[in-house]
Amino acid sequence: MSYIDIIPIGEVEEAVLSFLKQSIFETFKIQTRIRNRPFDLSLTYDPARDQYNSNGLLLELINEPPPETLKILGVTELDLFIPIFTFLFGEAQLNGRGALVSTHRLHNQFYGISANKELLESRLVKESIHELGHTFGLIHCFTLNCVMKSSTYVEEIDQKSVHFCRFCEQEVLRWRIEKNV
Amino acid sequence: MNSQGVGILVVDDEFSVRDSLYNWFNNEGYRTETAESGAEALKKLQDGLWDIVLLDIKMPGMDGMELQKHIKKIDNTIIVIIITAYATVDTAVEAMKEGAFDYLSKPIDPDKLSILIRNAANQRRLIAENIQLRQKVEELTLQDEIVGESPQIKKILEMIDTVAKTDATVLIRGESGTGKELVAQAIHGKSNRRYFPIISINCGAFPEGLLESELFGHEKGAFTGAQYKRKGKLEMANGGTIFFDEIGNITVKMQMDLLRVIETKQFTPLGSNKIVDVDFRIIAATNSDLEKKVTDKDFREDLYYRLNVFSIQIPSLRERPVDIPPIAQYFLEKYARSMNKDVTDISPEAMKILTQYNWPGNIRELRNTIERALVVVGKKNRIEIDDLNLLFPSKANPPGDSLEEIEKAHVKRILEQSDWNISRSAETLKIDRVTLYNKIKKYGLQR
Figure 1 (spheres, rainbow over the protein chains, first blue to last red):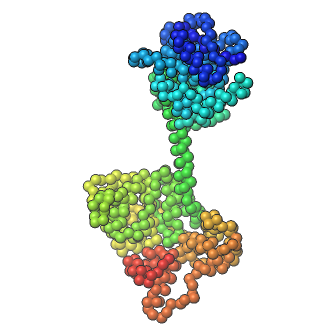
Figure 2: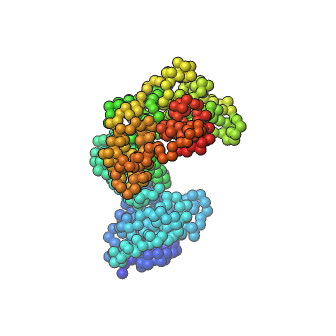
Figure 3: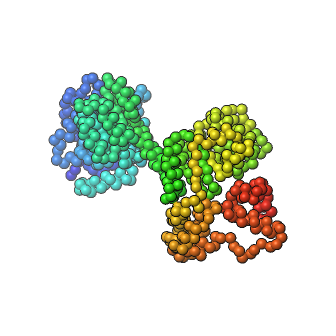
């Protein structure tokens, strides 16, 4: 059996992870599990930017996976960057194994407004499915409410739905048939 | 704009930058490649079609500024976006002065990158569309060709090439139907003003008051019937060329007004107190003897000299019979195509008739002859003498003996000889144009 592994990096609320696990299973219809493992975060921390290097975390995340692991989704509260960009909501390997999402800029509090747990969970689920979608070979989609639509503002995440459009859904299906998953 | 098909080349010596941007653009659906040096970038630019180049300004070897200059030499429509560290923003600004579209400071804000690339792709699309439209305009402005092999026509083509490069006023002389407007269009089409309009005005076709309003435009209520404000042809020709056909037919008052416009490039629309500045090139044409009109004080001498800066005399068709076969063949192909007929040539006998004919209506008459022949040719694929015979005036119904009948037949014949050129017919009949119009109406003459 193949699994999508959700791996928390640093402190992440159990309830949030459980909700995410259920949503990912419902979307991809692939067994999903939460797998804990230690991380050395010091190697990816950039004190000048007070952010964590997403590339480094992603490499660490996909290092030596169990044989039954199909995809890995790292979830973190840390603020992510890659050298060329000021920040990232998440990152993934196109057609690869690993994806990573950060809740840091998904919280309402980051933008100076009051917390909203439901909205946070909704944003996290959308970004997680979006990044995992890249690992299934999907590129950004131009369909307005497709979850694969590119979002560079948090408002854009709120505007799109949690679902793939029919074209992206077909692409995921085609990927699974080709890989016999 | 959809990212499909847009090609982005990322040029940076840092692997992490190339890799991150490559992944980002790939995810966005752009066709993306990277180059780690200026030399590699130039090679890739020679090999493929790129719309946008993201360029690091500081690279070992050829730096971004130098590379940008090379890129613009290869294709100056490629959009260049400079990537720079904070410390080199001044250089990025310098690069923008050299034609870069915009710059991004490292680290790049993903929001800004996303919007910038979308705008750049749009800009690139607009540039491409603009180039395509200009090409279309050029194709359209070609219109009819000036066809001919005679030394006279070759000389005229040389004169067109010479004068088109300048802004000089041109006076085109020649009989009716010799193609004066075609020469004017060719001059305009080869000039730097070709992307602006050429506005033609037939000075002989308007009564005095109307010509004034046609040229200068008018304000609402400027005269009875002026219900709306209307732009004049002089204003419409701004940036382009104005072609005055039959310039010899304008009144003395109009000559004075026109002279003032030519000298000042300013005019006041009728009923307005606002002066309008215009910039146009003037081409005028006439088939009348302007010099005689000057001597007879019918045409202002100063306007004559203003117009007669560069003169082109188009010979009549009967002066260059060698041009008749190629022109006839040109019209044959043109009208056969537009009528969807499979007529490919003119029989040697028919061609002999064409070359022997006097052609008082010149090329216009020849054109009409071929066009009519193509209508009556039926299913044959060649024009024969019989097809041309139909063009000659019918002798089946000779006029009666009354003065009216004889006058009607005579007026009709003169009109047909000049291909219904009113001014020329009136001149031949030694009557004024208004009288001629009255006779046409009286006898119910039709083309």
